[in-house]
Length: 123
Image (tube, rainbow, N blue to C red; front, top):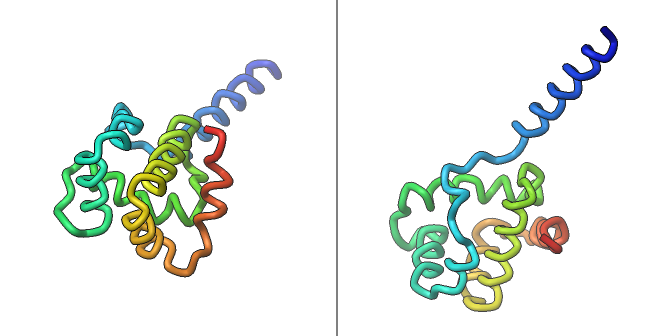
């Protein structure tokens, strides 16, 4: 009986932990391909920086950005952390002005980006 209770608690804890991660309807997006395609990356940045309307998929990501930055990707699973690392590093290297604008918009006081990068590096 104790084993059954323990297994139920373990399964419940695993399910609760899984619920903590962000759920995005488009996790199948190939972020490295987006970063390597200047047109796609520009389209994404135009959405994120309010220059153009967002597609539904991009709007879903945009809605998560403020919390993701402020919490250093605390609700990100490993794949999401890897995507965030690839995206932010690629953006910083390929489009430094847009990266600066992105940081000014989402972290104007400079409080969060260093911690975010620390939490997503190596993924």
